Amino acid sequence: MIQITPQMRILVAVEPVDFRKGIDGLAALCRQVLASDPLLGTLFVFCSRRRHALKCLIYDGQGFWLCQKRLSQGRFRAWPRPATGAALALEPHQLHLLLWNGDPTQAQTAPLWRRVPVAGAG
Image (cartoon, rainbow, N blue to C red; front, side):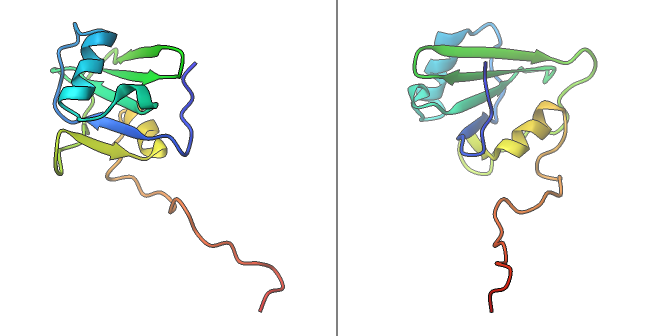
């Protein structure tokens, strides 16, 4: 099972990929295009050319997991645009939004970390 944890590194390939590629083809894209080692536990997210499906690739220390989500209707509207390079890093809560066809750049969420005041201090 793939579990998305708060400390997980997530990279989204901003350019669409050929969805005929399997684990080996996507791992090669990770190395060559995204300049990242797929064996380090990073979760990679890829989108199809028509943006109606995405694939996630991750190595769990023993083998690769490959999962796919295909929308029954429509397309993924808010696929990230490249800021610089071929990949964009997302926070785990942003990935959840993307998986539910939301726009992670437009979501208004709480900061990832904030100082918690200590009761009675001061």
